[in-house]
Length: 184
Image (cartoon, rainbow, N blue to C red; front, side, top):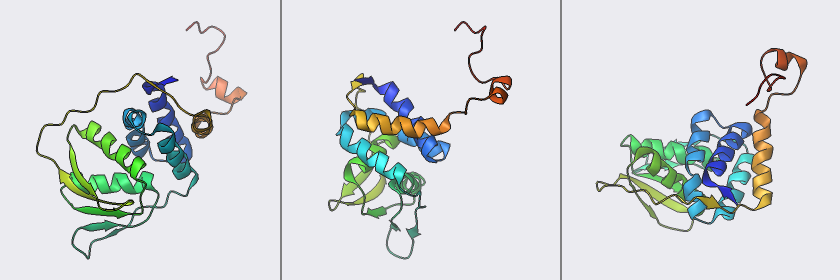
């Protein structure tokens, strides 16, 4: 069992280590409470699969009614779609997306913005993001602890390790490491 804050930190570091830009890694980390409230291991398996896939950019087709987002890595496509909706450019249609991970990313964005989003699943992998709801938003309560399959935790830590500075005399001279007189 881990605290939700530990999961949040692991998601942030893993996202950065996998190559996500800082803002997108923060979006992913902000989903930790919602991942803990849902099918944690299934969502983390999808997160790890996305991190192992190329970070193909999202594409958008503006020629039809509503914006249709093309296939891309969901860790890039969903935040782009949510940005469009937040800017008032909805509806946005996404097809071929994982429902559990998409719901967690949507819930994380609702937490970030403090506003509920109006969206509908019109198939097992197709969602329409309409825009913001007008009613007040109250986020679900955050759990304190979350059980994470060791396989997923190890995968997240492996991505996070890509952010570490290699140990060397040069890095120590530049201030890395605790040093001999550090008593923290």
